[in-house]
Amino acid sequence: MRLITNNWRLKLVALFIASTTWGVVAYAGNPVETKDVTRVAVQAGPPPNNWVIVNQLPTVTVAISGLHQSLVAFQSASLHATVDLARTRLGPNLLHVSVDNSDPRVAITAVEPASVDVVLDERDIVTKKVDLRFKNSPNNCCVAQNSKATVNPDLVRLSGPKSVLARALPYVQVDLSEAQTDVQQTLDVKLDAVDARAAPLVTIEPKQVQVSVPVTLVKRRAQAGLNETHVGQVAAGYSLNNIAFAPDVLTVEADPAILATVKTLDTPAINISGATGDIVQTVTVRPPAGVAIVGSAQVTVHFFITKNPDVQPSPSPSPSASPR
Image 1 (cartoon, rainbow, N blue to C red):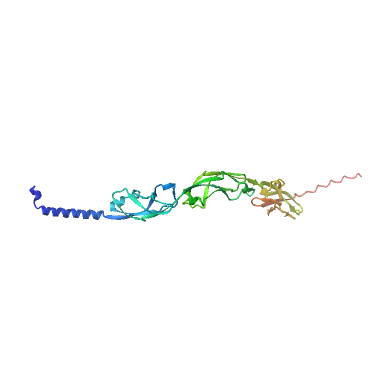
Image 2 (cartoon, rainbow, N blue to C red; image 1 turned 45 degrees about the vertical axis):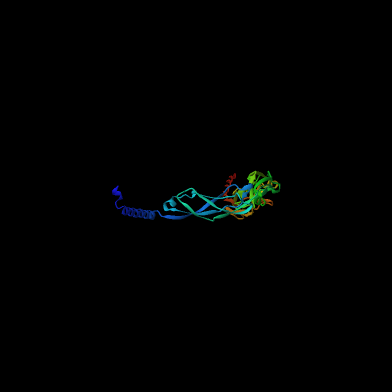
């Protein structure tokens, strides 16, 4: 006991110095710091009176402080920012942001902004007609009877903020690209005049409708052969043995009644006057009125011309000997 009490003042001073020195060293290695946690989402509970929030709540920045190692290990999910809607009113409200922290190692020092705008609107239900819109065109063989198109059902029920429903226009868009027969599609109902932020606030019932668009055939396609025409004659002693086409058929398009009469197409006349060898010529075929050629109208015509074989004269019979 005497060993402990001897020079107790000196020992107390020594202990104080040692503790202070240790604290300074520890503090230097793990100091108290501050840190900003950005983009903390603000949550709101259910609005009163079945109202609905019509604006997007902003995020806030939360300033926290603590030892360096605590800040390094801190998870932003520990922060929960909320606003209380219990005493709100229709229209804009400026509400204080409360932030809870589930990590006891750090402390919240500031929230920016400290208050946020919350706009409330009445929830409403309306019934509106579905607008039918078209994009692209049918195949050029056909015509879409847009005026006879139908939507089933043609009325949908919209529920959501009253201010959004007042301007919302439900519609479907049918794609007629290259259609050759009646178009039957199941399409999602979309909303026009409503921005991407407000659209999720509106519920559409039903979400899909059946669309039918009659398509009338006005033209058909078929393949037509080729019929060459030429003028003049090959040189004397030569013959026109054969004619070939490349391609040998063309695809044509016309009204069904006209198309039934088109079996072959004539090529432009090619002059073969005095020819002593093959003639190869590329020409453009001109179809008759009301007929269109699908693709290229050019055809290569090949005239095969050969020399006639030489004809050897037959020997004259020897004269018979006259009787003497």
